[in-house]
Image (cartoon, rainbow, N blue to C red; front, side, top):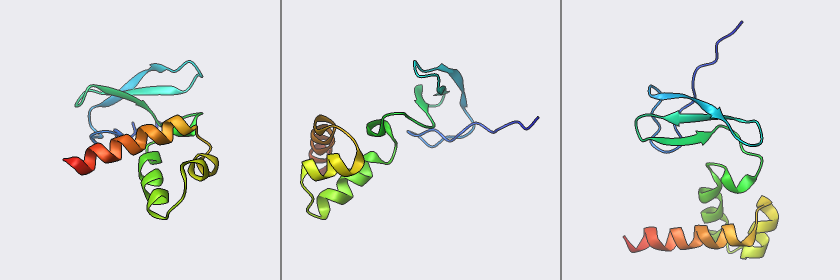
Length: 94
């Protein structure tokens, strides 16, 4: 039987302090990073929770795509697009 190594934390990118942390309601394995005390999954059913979604939205906005186009292309809801746009605005103000 092959033992799979624990994944890298999505938030602080630490590999050494990650351990299993139960299962989500959908049955996916959850992980807890003891370095930053945040939990995450390696895969999500809903695309709006994926780790790269923020970067993808930023890229598509830079290409001039509308919110509706981005939502359709990525398969996520418009309110998720709006939330990420607000986060991008907050990041640029800093």
